[in-house]
Amino acid sequence: MAPGAPLRYAVVSLTTALLGQVVLVVLYSMGLSAPRANLAAFLVAAVPSYYCTRRWTFRARGPTRWVSEVLPFWVFTAVHLLASTATATLAASVAQTRPGGRSVHGLLISAVVLLTGLGLWVLKYFALRATFLRPVDDP
Image 1: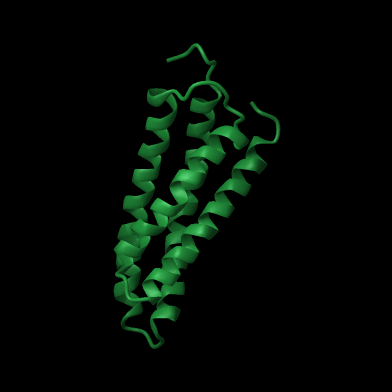
Image 2 (image 1 turned 90 degrees about the horizontal axis):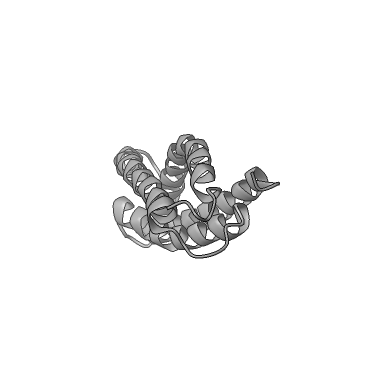
């Protein structure tokens, strides 16, 4: 294993999660629906997350392996997106029954999305560790 990988993974995850949550809250506060704001947040955060995870967290070098690196990363990202969109939609419908404006509701939605991602975060680390740390001659 690449020394320090768990800490680097946490730093990448926290940084890209913060980026995504800022996008989510801002777009929702501006009037975008919770699912659309969540999708935009994911699109903004996922690409830097992939590259930072590959290059910095696991120090993968050489050509990108589409089947053993890119595909698993994006499958986990898609599962995370579906789960967080479902919970963001549910949180938005609950938030609308509570006092407060869209900004307050956006913060509630953001908290629910973050909690949803926490469970997937640990699972994703171990799966990605197995894919990015494969020897270069593996397909």
